[in-house]
Image (cartoon, rainbow, N blue to C red; front, side):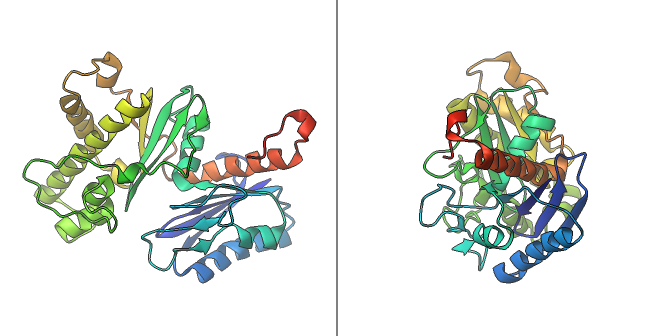
Amino acid sequence: MYGGVETGGTKFVCVIGEDPQSIISSARIETAGPAETIAGALDFFREASRGGVRLDAIGIGSFGPIEMRVGNPRYGLITTTPKLGWSETDIVRPFEETFGVPIGFDTDVNAAALAEGRWGAGRGFGSFIYLTLGTGIAGGAIVGGQLVHGLGHPEMGHIAVPRRPGDAFAGACPFHGDCLEGMAGGSALAARFGRRAEVLTGPDRKAAIELVAFYVAAGVRTLVYVAAPERVVIGGGLGSMPGLLDAARAELGTQFAGYPGLPEHAGAVFLVPAALGGMAGPAGTLILAADAAERDTASPLQGSNPS
């Protein structure tokens, strides 16, 4: 039995189970300050333990940036996040110290990519990208069946994108201004239109869809040229706006301008919606937990690789 925590700027989602179909308990905790919010998540699992649930491991999928290199002195920290009050927050140690079980730790979008790869729209593909469009924009990449990690983790929402002709918006990213997230994330749309994207109607809604479609296509074009994914899976609240994917597909074809000319890029099966919806991240944390439990129990003779 595994526990999972998806941390987000507006909410933490805590789950207990093995997969999306076997979740026995869940909770939503509104994101406030670090101490209060983490304490709420710990209390959820404490209550489950008092009810007889024995957790074998816990997976944490966190908003970033995070330090996920085991052995680094800052391992387990949310680092230079724009989320007010959360920079330099240790998200892993409270769970380690409270429950004494293995902890799987990665980004929330990497967790979602794992879940979509196992149970959702990425199933059967050895190479795909999961891109979430919400308050911010972020992504995870699966290459050769494995998550892409390196010196840190991918930050797809912060790639540079060309400006849409006539767009004079300065950008909402506090670090880069007019990166992908700064031009087309939920915070950027709220700054542009004075309201959250989900409540826009009429001409404003149409304009928002056209803006997001242009910048998502620009970002996906770059990701395609760098990573050559077999599929791009779009999740998040903005990603589910009616008409957005169709507009992004059409714009992507325009921005490819015939290169590399692969027919698969023109089909509706290349840029697709996430199959698991809002459950992708929480379900992925259960995979992180299961992987952590497996690493913890494997012996060196079995070829374990704790890194």
